[in-house]
Image 1 (cartoon, rainbow, N blue to C red):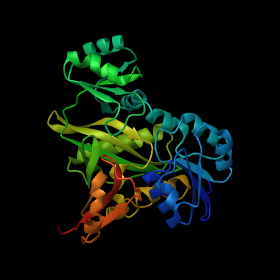
Image 2: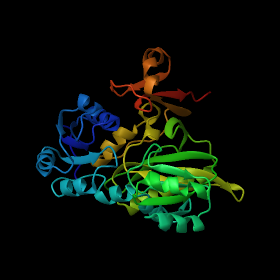
Image 3: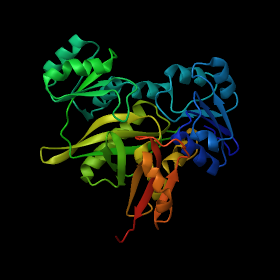
Length: 361
């Protein structure tokens, strides 16, 4: 295994804020970045080259692949076929196996169960009749979700009573779906971790997350949970990464459930990429999740994941929140990260702010 030297070019599929922060981290290590996307985005402002073309344009993909030393992606809705095509020319990390798993909620939960992890009860739903059968196995309340391409609450419909089933299935628009039973949980947490080319594994502190309107609002590390449950979450993440032969940073989202007098973790979702709940690492950890991802895909040693302080907090700046940038910039101890987006819209992630908790606080 040969590590990529500084000066090499890393290709990133996707032009959003995650690609932007990956490119900034790569530049710090001496790498150049080429962004490939079907639309312009904020990552274009900080890269050395960019390509705008469809993800199925083989001529454009070939030109992109021959200009880089390794490729990665910033979001999981990249077609698997795109990754497979590129991987025949240049290494893509993480690979198509992880992407295919993360794109399908049935695959995610099936893998988690196979590895001994707990999940909410679930059933595959491909038709209205399937939904009726599933509702006999999984009692209401439940939630019906598309198997693919849902995030931040999109592609979901609650079924609080059986009379909600027709509307829920109509909301899926005949797409392959999954019915999940409700889980009564105490908190939501995530593990953001990295696995290197040689199989080394390093995780950041388990992070506690608060959502508003289905969008992440606040993340705090370390999470306020029992040590045994935190260890369970970390070990589950390690097993999933190994099973997928994963290279790079990823996140596993969990529900924390109290049963039998102790806390348990239920796997909710996997993200095969850097993750919003890991943004606190940019100022609160010795290595940010973005640098860690670049290190992993470039074949470098993984960096330290230790906290720089007693704790760290990240708050997303959604929509008009970003208009308070000047107040945040004037606040001692506040670390502002603006994504460079000019179109402010409700529900749009515009930036985030990190704050650290002193060790003697």
